[in-house]
Amino acid sequence: MVLSPVSILGGDSVYCINEAQMNQAKQLAEENPESSTKIKSMIKDLESDFSRNERAALAFTIIDNLRENRDK
Image (cartoon, rainbow, N blue to C red; front, side, top):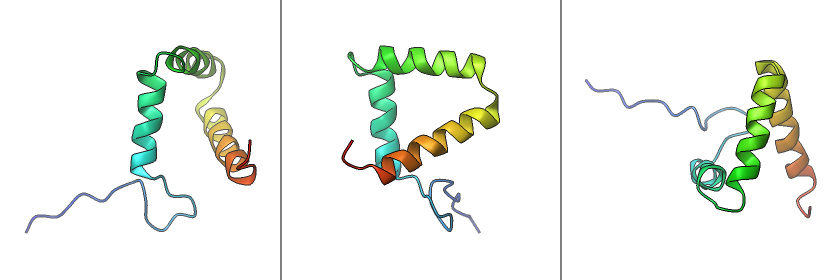
């Protein structure tokens, strides 16, 4: 019997990550000529200055701010 892998990008959590949106975000961060340089620079600084928990807190805070302020 072959079991299908369980996706970590959805399920019972309150906040599920849409795989298509994640792919678009990665493309923007890695391939977009205007955005990728800014995003990579910021990530490099954050990853060198913040702990893993601080980065996670920042990520969730940004997601919540985006959810609360959809017009910005």
